[in-house]
Image (cartoon, rainbow, N blue to C red; front, side, top):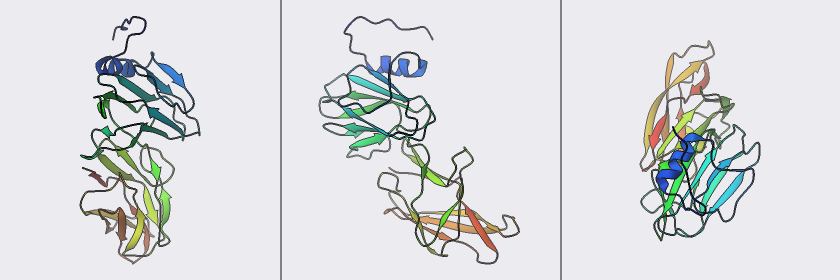
Length: 236
């Protein structure tokens, strides 16, 4: 892809911001929170273990701002609307006050319309977030993609679960997903239940309510863990 040329003081369009995000060689490198962000800037973010917040300016019609996470550090990035809301896949019809951009390589470009911000390229991506457990449930291993603990990941308007969970009370809430990562209606999914012999020879289930409560059920004989890799649903 050829390098684009710009003039001094030029405010970039959403298409230009998208082009820069894909090239990964232009942009402003940052390793800290920014408030407010500057119109026409692509922020290339290096977190390490630290979490940052990026506060958008007023959503003047036509201005665009981009963000891309450049490292695999565990730190989280939150993009917050200083005024108005952020609209796009996964934010619902009313929009959201903030979106994540936390996985290695994740990027998002937002454009103002005079009132709100719109996602015009890329998508929100939380990266793998550890689950919040109840009723003695704990992680038994991370998802196939490499995270170290069972968790969820919000990508655009899709939530994925990954890893395995164990040791909890049967037919009880095992974990609760936060607002923004919940299904609009109840979701029931069959999963594999491993026995102490190490064989996936039983079926279990995960039932997630619109309030985010996830009930785990398994066949009691020789229960070892429930594998939740492959459970996914949309949030809107």
